[in-house]
Length: 279
Image (tube, rainbow, N blue to C red):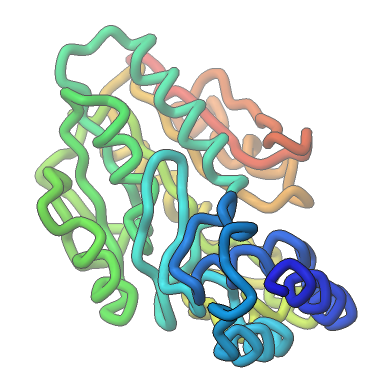
């Protein structure tokens, strides 16, 4: 019974243009029935919960899967998310993976890390978890987003602050080993092409940044240079269409070295890195 319903739901979601219809139909079935996705076959016909069709209708209308279930998975974390906070994406996991490798290669006993525009807290929490002796600081501007960030960071050792990423953490100037950010980077001109899940449900503050999408990244370049010690590293996520543009923001003239772009798991340009030049 349930597997037949899941197949029917998959078709409905596919017809609605949902990018991963089978995955979402199964995730929602598991969510409604209180089981893991891999054990859906154990749910008896008599235990089918009609609320399944209610959540399928919501997903059909392109409400994000994570808003319906109230959770998002990121690396080894399960995060609480909902309206008002940006839902972390799988692409950002490779950004964090690169950052973790970079911090480990520094051979610093207690690396100092700053996450700018932290949103749900996914990046900061992943770094705190996977780099055990790191000292992680994070900043978020939006009060709506912070309500979720605080839930996710409860009991963690991340120092969370509310404020503007451009002037945050002046008490850490020149001391930071790694600055990382997944800032807003969608050009305002691309609004109509953004997937409904993001355009209609993620906060605009987390999505758009000027005509070419790079306004905030240009500002973060100065923030990162202020915060980093010489030899420290900055990692900034960007859109796959901005490959090649972002490294040019981190120029030698502005005090950077080794600026480069890196691909995500789909081999699309996804994030730029640079090292603060030695004096």
